[in-house]
Length: 206
Image (cartoon, rainbow, N blue to C red; front, top):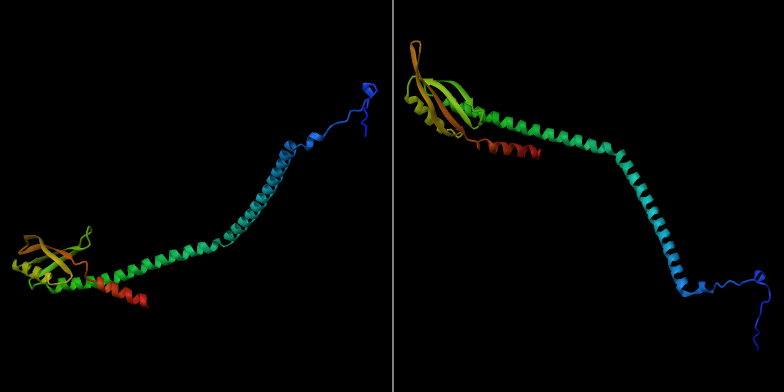
């Protein structure tokens, strides 16, 4: 077949120029374009998924906050009950302690009284404010040896850990004279503890 040479004899202003779009099919253009398109689609799809997930999370969070707000009274009630329980426990412990202390002091005063010699009388029994295990016994006697006798009798009592003479003074009031003394007693802190533990154990069983 013979190829013919085409010659356009029309003036330039009348000539129709054919545009060449073949360059668009070049792989150097197609591949980057498709890659960008895929990235754009993936970006918008990912963004939509994330937004949808966030919306679901926000909705769940609001629902949970509403539920917490609706049940907030339960937490307040629990705190009130815990506070009441602590107060009751503290009161029970105090009552048990008072009960044991009362019994202990009855025994202490019995020991102080029954050990008194015939010519001796007491003017005061004072517990130390600084240390509750220290106690001063103040009294008078006409006979000096009775003070030593009284101290020996006190040492036999299980409630007294240590007995010592604080002071002694010869005093004359009107026509009568007597020895005014102070005996320092260290109370045994362990006496009565067993009773407290036993009492607490029985109450727990009940």
